[in-house]
Image 1 (cartoon, rainbow, N blue to C red):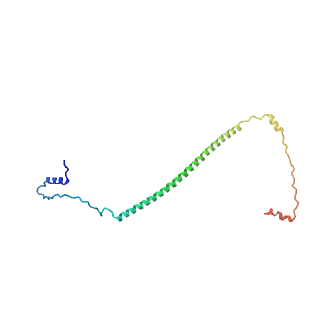
Image 2: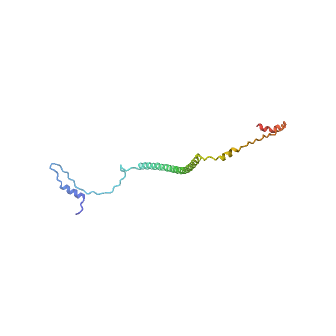
Image 3: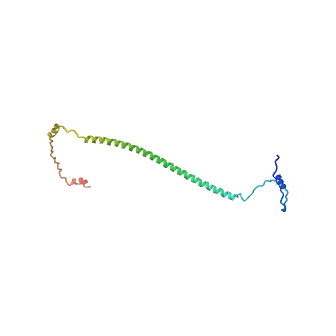
Length: 171
């Protein structure tokens, strides 16, 4: 089937059409339309140079503020990383202290149990010492020793000339 042009189809349809009686009919002859290339210079939809420059400047400002926000966020990230490392170091130190405290508590509990065992041993009734040991302790009498008090030698009185040597005592 051969390819038909749109104009040929329209003409064929127009010939088939028969208007109702009493209506005026306008007859138009078909003409071929030649397509030509046209350049679009300034249409109402295309922005001019000033508008483009304004838009570029606005976008540059947005980029600058975005970069500044990015720099601020990077600084915050660094600060948070420093804080996290400090917290991790603190946690590690506290864990070590906790381990030491646990070991100390275990040692104290062990010492406490040993002391409780010693207390139980001391609270148990002791066998009565035999009578010979008590008689020996009664027969021993302690003697008190008395020493005579030694008198200090008295120093001779000092001359008035030596008085200046002893003034250091008055300071």
